[in-house]
Length: 639
Ligand code: ADP
Ligand code: MG
Image: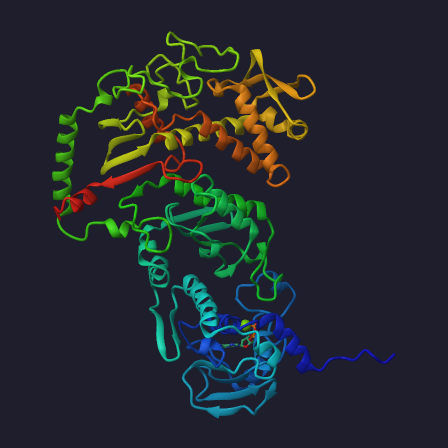
């Protein structure tokens, strides 16, 4: 009885402040957003002691008059919306009208502001929610607001503030987000009197990234642009060779508001699928623009999350925007591969680009020199129809494309049309005019034949001429990528074509594996593999995909079961298929050490041109290293 009381307004504000004001960086965000909403073209941010002592934001926006100044600090006071309908068409960053009231309840705030119409400005101080009187004060048009001694009246919360460096890190992050999304505004940040950033108005996004992150990264970024229906997507993404171990360099802006969104993040990851190793994250600066009616921004106190009217559509647009662009870009790794620069594993072209000079003339010289070299070198691989590098067996016979090569298969023979030729190894030179490739590739008619000279070295790498230099290709990684793409293309059209085995191969299975066969029937069907029980603890492989002709069905099914068992219940079906394809491509691909003949090399190179994402193997390792003419010149000290 009598235990319920209505909380005082001050206490309500302090509670609300807990939501809005977590640390100095939250204040920076709110104040800078207010300046942007006020139409400022210049905003300066000064902080002391990581913002714990002072945060000051000075802008040249529309300012406030004496009357508005006081109102601005009362809860739910805003000039940005006035009706419920407005909530669904928000074009400003703020609209809840609680930031200033919240901030002023937990710190000592002083504002000086002036509108263009007023002849002088007004000053108001609010300390821990206690209002002073509004006084006249000299001021330029705009607003200067300083927030001192955050949490001075809530010691329990002050204790939670971290070191100056940590808090400054969070502030910089907020500053960066605004700097990236408002390149038209002149921005500066100083800490303890030292200027950290001065960003002139009108810089491009790339320039800002160059200043805020790294000039080398900025030079590497690929622009994306897509407009479809009401959604416009623009931005910059780093090629897969520049990646991070965490996702913190993935910026997503919706109508210039920095947001987190699991649909968009998923689409970003998907768009890089197969190009990055599992533990790497892409670097992305993504800007979505869509009509405010199609998104609800009022679902999170700091407005960091939003709700899209149609998240699936957003997902597919983002995926398409990034992927299309990546596929069109040359993602080969430039040399030197060892210039890490601390940022990522990837090297940056900026290190290797020629500085100055008459590039054209030098390029021509080197091009000619290289052409001469390749002519006179008479690379063994281009001479005959057979791999000219002697194999271990000495016969120049190709083991391509692996498995059961040379009739070494231990299991019972199974029937594949055309699987057995005069060499008994199921070998067919895949690029010969009449023959079908004996590994899954796109039809060779549509493959442009490589034009320049090429050769295989160490039975592991292909070296060939490109328009602007030379390429060194990891034959296994490239073939793996080709197989992966072809398999996934086929799978997208339906189950892989399979064929009944004349003599079924038998695989011993544990009870758990037996259960997996049952629960993952769909995966087996998709892959075109039919297995039937064969006694209490074994199964017989009755049908097997045509495309995997050379692989032993028993081995393959045993490995597939291991994979399915290891992942069962832990990954989505889609991820499972992805891993299965990975494994399949890896097993079926030509290995390092396999000699290749001219036709085989030609075919691989031709496929490289037409297969999507050929620059990386499915595990994300690069398939190709590129050495450009200018880089060669540099190495030969011709520049
Ligand atoms: P909101 O931004 O959600 O409206 P705030 O508490 O952040 O709420 O600000 C309250 C009001 O104060 C704003 O609606 C705006 O009218 C005014 N205001 C705040 N900061 C500025 C500024 N820098 N310049 C001009 N007006 C401002
Ligand atoms: Mg605000």
